[in-house]
Amino acid sequence: MPIVVAGLTFAGTIVAVLNQQRWSNITAPLIVAWSIAAGVVLPTILRSLSVIRQLPRPSGEPPPRATSLGNNGGPSSTRFQEKHLEL
Image (cartoon, rainbow, N blue to C red; front, side):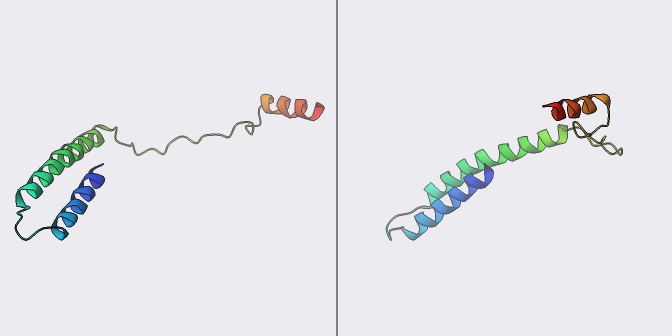
């Protein structure tokens, strides 16, 4: 979201500068537009960083390996194979 807001504000600034009339002053509208963009972007970034900091830290141990279903060599997989062969 912050990239979209900043991009739209930047694009709006370019359009405003390119379509500016000689007698018009666009400084105040641009200040308002960039202030609104900053009011949206900065709290979003700060909140995202706060949430990231609250995530649990990974331990030094590797995660447990997941075994694939049906290939564990147990009796249930053998029964499944036998039933499959009977059909």
